[in-house]
Length: 264
Length: 285
Image 1 (cartoon, rainbow over the protein chains, first blue to last red):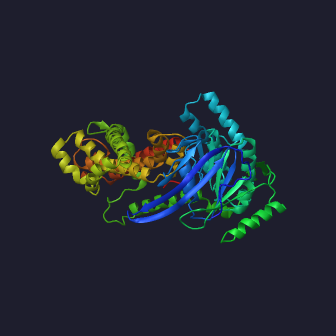
Image 2 (cartoon, chains in turn red, brown; image 1 turned 135 degrees about the horizontal axis):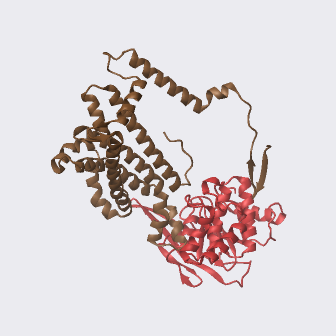
Image 3 (cartoon, each protein chain N blue to C red; image 1 turned 45 degrees about the vertical axis):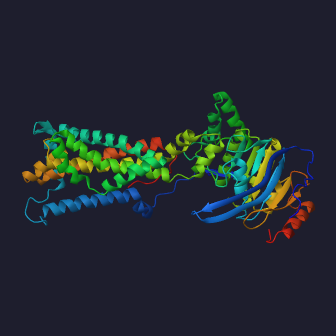
């Protein structure tokens, strides 16, 4: 296992999220023990777009849910800005793989529902909601219901909903996994554009290497079987917006692919 | 009007289209036309069956015209001290009271049972015991306990419509996607927010469907209860028709029942569309 604390991108940036020695075991049906993560330690730096890359069933979604506070690790600690993470909260925004929009609310209401829980004034909510709906490119669709939207549009609502809470960290759990290839590429470019416009610390989980190279400042690869362990870490020092056909991109892609057991 | 397309956020919306010219095959296959033809055949068949006495002796079945004229007579005279409207209101009143009671009892109880495992453990076995019992079996018990006034009839209606309302609201909560609760928690919500923001809106479509079943069950129960012991109502009219061998009256009563039940179900469907505007259009049967 390579040294995972090497970070060429910005060694001076403070550590935003620190995961130390995370171990997670699920107990199913009382006796069947499934080890999901084994001594995973990852540091996420401030304003960095970290990509966790790994094939299916390697524990990366569980890792993300633990950072979000939805699961508690069996061992180990997670801290955000020095404070330990124990429960979910609006300081960590989460974008779900299957969109998870409320089908009984319009796009507008879906984005504003978290803000209403926060207790902001009506004008503030209006302003924030229209800003983020415009940011994700859905201006004009405020009154639409989720069942009238396509998959890419639904996920954009999910991204707007998470961004609108102004979280310290954005967590994205394979958000484009259910989209077709063309929409997926478009959404990756949109995410890069949105992230560049409103810079935030982001942890992005994916199984797609092109997506990882297009988005990540740093890529952490996971081993391909349970229990999940960190394999290695790569700094992506390519100019933005990323060009998937450039030499640097393809060279790094080759390096990462060689290291994996399966072709990516 | 030509096809206009609009490129919005990588999505293309095509607006408008030309009207197609008249096509006889398409006309014959049109659903509304076929429905009208089907109804026409039905009434013609009914008239033929009634007038040709295929079902035995002469007064077994009344023709549609006979039913209509008998209904016209009924609406302009009184029967057992009440006009036809009075009878309709008598049955309707019983249904509405019973249905409302059943809904007010069943829907909240179903929600609480689904959300609280302790309440579920206490209440569910009792519901399971009473669930298969047909409401009509309760008629004699109801008369024993409550006499022969309005109370036993309303009791039967509540028994009959309580179970569908309860079961639908119970199941609706169990069918909610569990990750939706995660959404609320990640946005900073607590348990009460989860119930308020996810449980209740998500269960509305199923509750609404359950209430529609509840209503039709209520109608079935009121007529059965009236058939047994009543001096007013639509069931009473049917029984009178049977007693005096007046098939036009019996059929007339059935027609009035069908029309009113249809009107009520249309009202419930309208309310359902207003409450749950996000549901896709499903053609109702």
